[in-house]
Image 1 (tube, protein in one colour):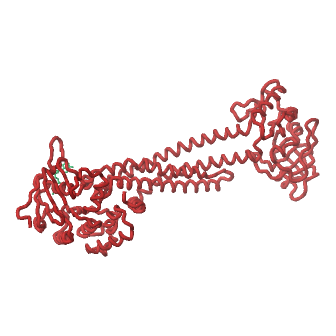
Image 2 (cartoon, each protein chain N blue to C red):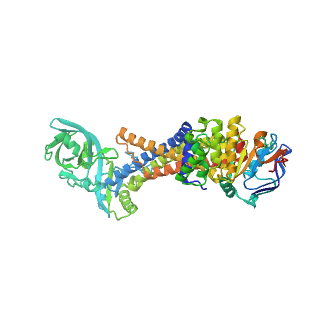
Image 3 (cartoon, each protein chain N blue to C red):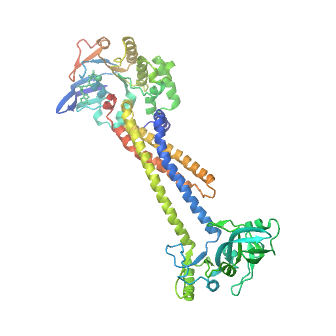
Length: 401
Length: 226
Ligand SMILES: Nc1ncnc2c1ncn2[C@@H]1O[C@H](COP(=O)(O)OP(=O)(O)OP(=O)(O)O)[C@@H](O)[C@H]1O
Ligand SMILES: [Mg+2]
């Protein structure tokens, strides 16, 4: 082919521009498919990064222990009464397992917190002294709850940063006496801001000893025990040791262990489903787009048969004819891909603005992939019409009315 | 330059065989001016398409500059058509979305000429056919005679040695037809070879060498050589 690239592009662009509405509609077909894919992958990637950030924020070497046997892997469905409760004594015992660096007994409920006539309904978290280390959650002022593995813990409270501002404003809360539900507590510390973890607000909250919280809420079992283990140890080995201990204490294996790996697996399942949806939706709309290009180019070849005959008479090779028609299809596909990318990214951006807290994260890989797919779809759909144009007999083509 | 030896072109229509060309022998020397006349369906266009390497003989040989064209592949044939042969058709065959200049530019584009060189040549060609002021007009903004002049400028774009015109005046009134023929005859004056198919005996008789076709057979007209 002697035709220069730039000239080929001019001819191809000219043919498409001569039928602006038709070209636009075809481009739109591809664009919608690509936009769907870009938008949904942006959401999926956003979700993944959000959850990953949530976990890494709290340290990746945590194992959660919940009462009851999980029915679905990863999520613990505790059926109270049918198994032994998870107790503070269990938590204390777990601290002696080799490789364990910190243990946090955990329970929570909502309750009113009152100070000098101000009342605020917040989460009350019953935790252990090792919580700051385990959750990477630092104390801003004062100190955290003292260690009281045995015996009764004293009525001390540590405020979340948000609650502290709501109740005390600029005053120092240290040493103040607040009322949680019907009990009185002494404020001994304030936490740094931490944000939310999987929907739990860590800042608009108050932290009290887990033993006190169990009594306050009239509960027998902890909701969870979190174990921080030495990073150099394989997680399976730690879980085995923990399970042996709890099985011995409870008489049977009636708790569920969830590691970060498990959580990411659940996330992986969700993302897989999202990916499948994306692939399905994108595939269907791209198929529609491809049929559009195939139809348009078939019509173009039929309409421009005489022109093909003329180009052959002027000395165009069959390959040049094929390249020109294929170029039109490729340009339609690429234009559709670019438009779809714009639509998808714009849509993702708008969605992020409109719905607060919705994690949207456009992925460059997927965007590039979408563009490549659009080009590929254009080429594939344009191949048959282009070959048909190239195979036309020039004499008959010239004779066409 | 051109030599046809026992060339036949057959079409099967139903169970009947049509001899569009029937044992045609023809030698054309460089610089010759031939007219081809004959009734409709006698095979004139078929002969021209064959000479123009758009079609191949079913029997016989076609030698172009001594080379058997049956042995040439698509790329060779395309290059010969591009650089050595210019076509002019009865129905102009201009690309409707391209301007006059754009249509004239096409063969040079296909041959890979750089833009500045093309521009200069397009201007000269349009001047030569008297359409310098219509360069930006699209075909539907031109008269029939003007369209055919654009087609002639396009046929001459790569300076071909052989110009094949298939009833170039067939769609024009007499005045325009004469103008077109004047342009084509100027081509011969430049030393090119012209084969002109026409229904008009008056135009046909202007050629020094006249061929007649009947039922696919080719005859030299008496007194034609001169
Ligand atoms: N594709 C084809 N299939 C069948 N027959 C064909 C085909 N092309 C041409 N023919 C036949 O070949 C013969 C010659 O056709 P051609 O077009 O060369 O005639 P022509 O002399 O140019 O006629 P006109 O003066 O009307 O243009 C005709 O009888 C025509 O019917
Ligand atoms: Mg004819």
